[in-house]
Length: 102
Image 1: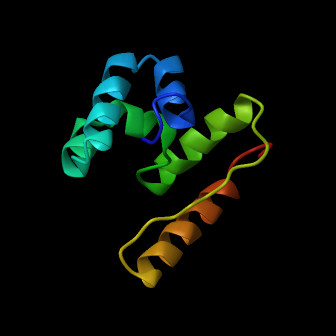
Image 2: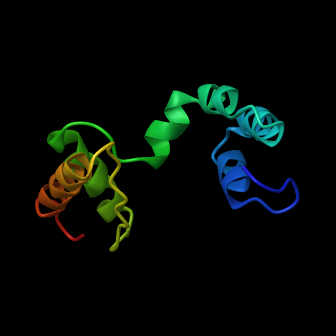
């Protein structure tokens, strides 16, 4: 969570209503307590800022972005292996093809 003075991610979390959690995560992170910082991250914040779940859920979430005027998404698939990352990317591409106006 980087600098206390200029931190995009901390500021974003605060704007989204996670001020207390953002302060706690940042303090833990800057104290080099990385596991504790990760554990302190609210699950709802992760859900609010990520595309996670089944193909149907991905389509629903992407449609919400499209309905809000988003026309471009950056996809950064995660997986422990290349095959897992490719599978996640393929799922995102498949979901995006089902979204109107994205």
